[in-house]
Amino acid sequence: MLTPTGMAEADPLADNNTPEGKAQNRRVAVNVLVSKGLDGL
Image 1 (cartoon, helix red, strand yellow):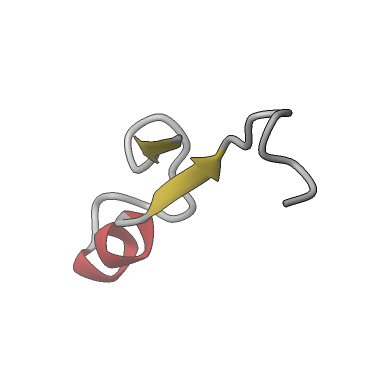
Image 2 (cartoon, helix red, strand yellow):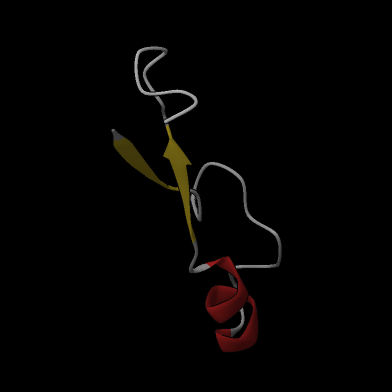
């Protein structure tokens, strides 16, 4: 299962008042969840 999470507003890396800062804050974290039944295949 994949769970994408947008993070720009919740956890900014840079200042959102500049175009460069906004570009740095455009990112997505993807968590990959592996079922215990599939682990080790």
